[in-house]
Amino acid sequence: MTNPIPLHSRHRTVLPDWLALYYKQPIELTHGEGRHVWDADGNRYLDFFGGILTTMTAHALPEVTKAVSEQAGRIIHSSTLYLNRPMIELAERVAALSGIPDARVFFTTSGTEANDTALLLATTYRRSNQILAMRNSYHGRSFSTVSITGNRGWSPTSLSPLQTYYVHGAVRSRGPFAHLDDAAFTAAAVADLDDVLGQARGGVAALIAEPVQGVGGFTSPPDGLYGAFREVLNRHGILWISDEVQTGWGRTGDHFWGWQAHAQNGPPDILTFAKGIGNGMSIGGVVARAEVMNCLDSNSISTFGGSPVTMAAGVANLAYLLEHDLQGNARRVGGLLLERLRAIAAHVPAVQEVRGRGLMAGLELTKPGTDEADPDAAAAVLEAAREGGLLLGKGGGHNTSVLRIAPPLSLTVSEAEEGAEILERALRSVQ
Image (cartoon, rainbow, N blue to C red):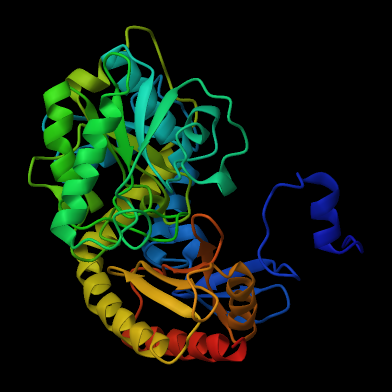
C-alpha cells in the first residue's frame, strides 16, 4: 500500500534539518539511462551534475550493472579479513595508474573516509597533527576533514583534532594575488606558504589540496603551483596529499589526475579518490607509497571498504572508461561546452566568470556591475534550468553563487549543445 503522506514531508519528519535538498519542490529521481534521469512524475532531465560528479560514465551503464548483478549472485560481502579478488584486481589497476612509485591502495566507502585515512597516515608518519590546507577548500564531513575545510558553509564546528594553517593560491580570480599574472601569482603563493611555515611549531605533517576545488566552485590555481609548493614541502619533509575525489579519472580532460597539471616535481605522496570510480557505487580510497601506507603499527580492517560488489563495479567502470577514452571525450566535448558557455556569458551581465577544464565547468554569478556574489540568482537559475529539463549543481566560497557543471564523461556533442541552450534560457530568464 502506498503511503499517502508526500515524500518531502516524510523526509523532513525523519531526516536531519541540515541535510540539504535542491529545489523549492524537491524531486525524487527514479531511474536513469545514459546522460538522462527521470523523476517520479515522469519528467526527463539531462543530467549535468551526475549525483555530485559520481555517475562518471553513464546512468545504467550495462557493463557496470552486469558486473554488479553477477557479483551479487555469487557473494555480496566478506570484509577485508579474507582474500578478495575484485578488490585486488582494482587495487592493481589503480596503483598502476596513480603515478606513485611502489604504491599501496586502501579502499574506503567515501571521499570523506578516504581523506580521513590520508590524514591518519600523514600525521602518524610525520608524528605531527599540523596540516596545511587551502583556503576555500572542502574535504569531507567527518570530524577531522571538517577541521581542514576552508569553506565556512561546510564547516559546522571550529573544534578540531588538528592544527590547520590555511594557504593562499587555490582561487585564481579572488584574493590579494588576483591581479598578478600567473608567474607572479605562483611566486606570491609560494612566498605565503614559506611565511605560514614560519608560524608552525615544529614539523608540519602534510599539505592537502584539491587540484580543482569542487564545493568551492571549481576554482583552481595556475598550472604548476602545487609543483612549486612541492619544492618548499620537500625542504621540510612535508607530505603532499592530492584530493582527487572530484578531479580524478580524466574528468579534467587534459590529465587523468588533477595533480598532473602540477607534476614538475613528481607525484604526490598520497592520493585520495572516490565518487566517479564506482559510477554510483560507494567507493573511495587512498593511494600512497609503501613506506607511508605501512607506517601504522596497529591492526586495521575495513568492514565495507573493498566490498566485492562495489569492487566489481569499479573494475568494470574503469575498464569502460579506459577502453572508450572518456578522458579524451572530456577534453573534446568539454572544450566545446566551455567555449559555448563563454559565448553565452558574454551576453549575460550576471555571469562574472566561466572557468573550468574538461567536463568540469563553473559559472560564477554576481550582481551585475559588481563583485558581490549573488546566491539568489544562482538558486533561481538552478530552478529555471530544472524546469527546462536540465539538472545542475551549486557551489562557491563565501556564498553559494557558482553553478557547477559536471555531466557524465560520455556526454555527446549534441547533448552538450542541448544543455547549453537550456542553461542560456535559464540565465536570461532571471536577468
